[in-house]
Length: 498
Image (cartoon, rainbow, N blue to C red; front, side, top):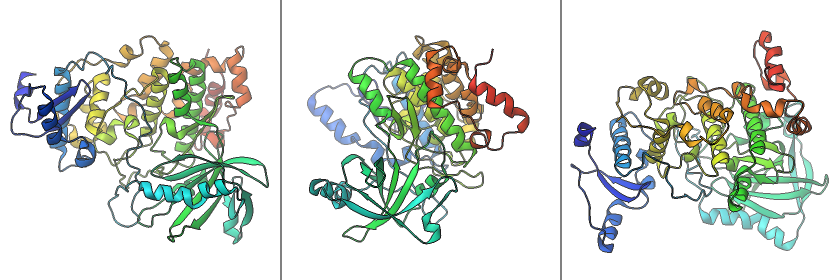
């Protein structure tokens, strides 16, 4: 450890045990003054928005890999010096809806680029343009829309026609980098729906509509209608009329946090089962990687425990011969291979994200809550330990020869020592550095963690039957699984192994 410290290049400025910043210098310097002027000076030197200014820290490439890894090494050791290795940060970080930067790939060009968030002015204009104005005026909106038929995977547009629907704008329930979401009721059918309005930027490829057309599963949000329209500045917007769900999983968790209590473990189990069931479908049938699994993108109905995956704005069918952007997925749920700059990652990044979501439901706060891309990897290493050479190779072979300083990790056992052993089995099978060592969603469904809702003599099983979460159509759920395995797999998904 002494040799590593002697060779470190960096200046470390401490603010607290889990909130520090780096600025490269030719040698290590220590700062001891705690006066207000000195703090102000250090703040001006380092800056508060390191991640925005030094974007290369979050998007490592092969040219700056050594620099990136050295930064990680520096931060690991500085946190150990500051006492960070013994426990998870006690300072609770408010889990606001941070989605980092939404990313979409460019239509033209070999390299994929990052699109910036919509400006606040543009979001406000989107709201005022249609929904808020019509809410105040109580106007009925009439739209010519394309109705999607999930049975035939076709819509009216294919036949050159549209249908008419009417609705009165009601409530803006969300807005962000993607656009605006409102809830309303279709007058003709009296059906409550959510409408997601997305700016169509010609510079970037938006796959969300085409992805939504491919989906037909009880645990993925359904597309009812869609239509295009222009605003007063002649910008084109796509509106997706979607299934309505009362809450996001993030809102549900915050409810229990505000009450200073835990989410019921059985409720978590229901949501986790449906999450893996939905991912199994996405990965196997349409072959889609969601790439942004997080509590805000998971919708629930607490009254019935029903569950749906939503927001397919970052989703993509991954192909082995095509590179992908590594700066994808919200930071707290970002798989480690993405932080190592991998561009040939697999659907298993969704499994890592899902495990992080389940861990957050159990803890009431994110398991890994880094303040930047580098810090996020450090938070993972503090709990998971230093990855082995084989694990690094599995994430990104370009880094396999790098040797990290050895540390004693907290471990998942240490974090979840009060939980049932079945919970630990699920998390240790999904939170693995090497993507190939993570359990697939299908294998997760077979773990003993879900036995409680499979046993016929329990109230939980009766609720599960009501939700029809064990309705398991082989063609729908598994796609091309060999027929010799079907009967066994189907039975295990419905009933625990005895």
